[in-house]
Image (cartoon, rainbow, N blue to C red):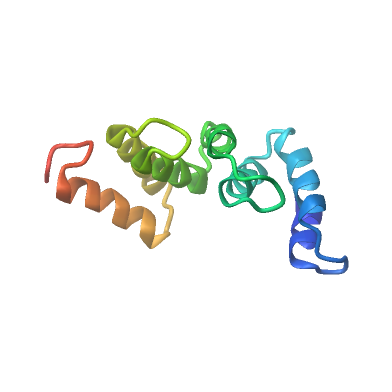
Amino acid sequence: MELGRRYYQGEGVSKDQGEMVKWYRKAAEQNYAPAQNDLGVGYEDGIGVAKDQTEAVKWYRKAAEQNHAAAQYNLGICYEQGKGVAKDQAEAVKRYRKAAEQNDADAETQNNLGSRFYYGDGVPKN
């Protein structure tokens, strides 16, 4: 995965998103959760690959199954917005909660979970 990051950033090698994806995929296929999450981001944003929300969800889910907090959050966004999966506010809340319970310090994670309770999206309004 580190080699993939080097290709993405052009550190010691020429920037090459195709090479980045190649190395991220190698790490992701070895069940390395950070690489799975980052590969999902690549598919979601079309970095080095064609945009593919369904493929992004696949990789986020693999990382989330290993309790990767950022992947839990990213999967929550997909469920909240219906990107690559059917909209499901309860599932979005579940994913945001898992990320928050893993002490994900990202303010967006905390904010999205709080907003679900404030508006009653997927949970009783509270």
